[in-house]
Length: 149
Length: 149
DNA sequence: AATGATATTGAGACTTAATTGCAATGAAAA
DNA sequence: TTTTCATTGCAATTAAGTCTCAATATCATT
Ligand SMILES: [Mn+2]
Ligand SMILES: [Mn+2]
Ligand SMILES: [Zn+2]
Ligand SMILES: [Zn+2]
Image 1: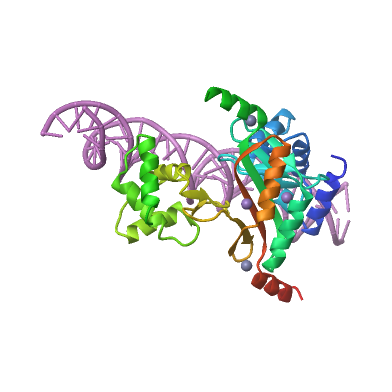
Image 2: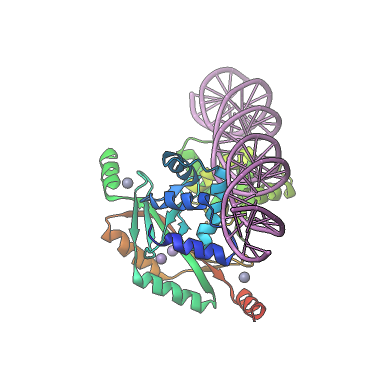
């Protein structure tokens, strides 16, 4: 929490936008998640915290948080778009279990370097990337193997 | 075209589903695209080819084509979901220009191997993955550099 | 502290991708 | 052919996300 606030405020100042209490509350709510979240979950969290912020405001705040680098879009699971707080977090990619929904985060330096190489080969200037691997987590794979026996 | 038809027919037979003329036309239309396409484009292509297939049928056919491995979901660009014909095509990942929308396909054996390694380390059984790198293509980067001078 | 320019808000209407119910139709096994 | 059941088109429906607009809040300036 500490200075994500500050980072957001500076970002808004640069853009000549105002740091309203609604935006503060949205940021606070985001930092109380310890996993990916979607707009609906954020809306409910805000209500739990006693702040009734309209969906419209949430939808309008999200692009600002994305631009300021405080959150990132996570893998489109099913229908809804979900997000992830990345303030002061190291970049990582995801393994997603298609059976139970579990998400395992990983970081592989060599994959990252190879991506840079690929970009250079194509004279492409990367801004961001996303690597998502879907499959079965250990537990789910065991279960499924048993069932099909 | 040649035996994607056959593959689809076999898939449908296995599932005890029928190979209707509508499904044939949808498959044919998909094979006349040489790039990613979305449902609306598919609908229009079908009309061009003289086949009026309802959107509902298209939406119902797509999951079957996905399951049978004939197409795959491409990166969510903006709002609409788009798809890509992958019959008899080698797996590849994408560089997407956030300025002009150009898509560059690439394949990097070492990245693929490293992904497998990551999965093993987590006892994760991969089914599919997607790696998308967003950034600026050569042309767009040049343009933007000029403008900001 | 008061002013004023302008950004922001909430509510609900609106847009649009995707899904669904249903009666009519079609495929294909028997 | 007959019979069974999957499939189709249409229109109604759902739901994520956007937009409009009048009322309000922020903040630089006085
Ligand atoms: Mn990565
Ligand atoms: Mn790959
Ligand atoms: Zn699992
Ligand atoms: Zn470009």
